[in-house]
Length: 117
Length: 108
Image (cartoon, rainbow over all chains, first blue to last red; front, side, top):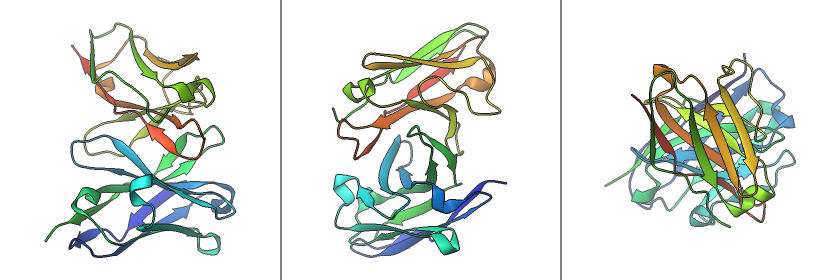
């Protein structure tokens, strides 16, 4: 079964750091571009960051310099290191697999990040 | 262009046909995808590559694209189709992913 499972969310103070992980199974992880997408409560989907198969990352402007996406193909894992967190980063964070047509065809269940003092 | 525009809400009578649209300059160059999201659930891809249905998606869901507008059409709308629908594509540079703000579909 094709599956993505996120972990690492939680409560963190403003200015703090958190590392999210996404474990992939059921497909050849190294063959796909992977992404993080977030959704604040009651709001829409917001793309955060993506990483290409060969490791080239790209970011939403508001997280550039604060978030770092990475992948470890040998472990079928995707990561998002988040630092200098702000209240506006509070959201459910999903990892997602990208198809050749730029669509996201597999999503995890999400992990909640709450930035609050 | 740096955004995709969707109507905030659309309503449709049970069994009727509804079209949800997504506008953005980047749609002239990049494919659109459509996602259904129900409360408490992760998004579900219902259309990719402008007009293709993933396996398992009912054939009442269809997509099209012309110029700067992509459309999702649901024919014979069912009660279980009530959900939020999001379009996505790339920005004009291709270096960022965009999502529309979503359309809440209300089935009457």
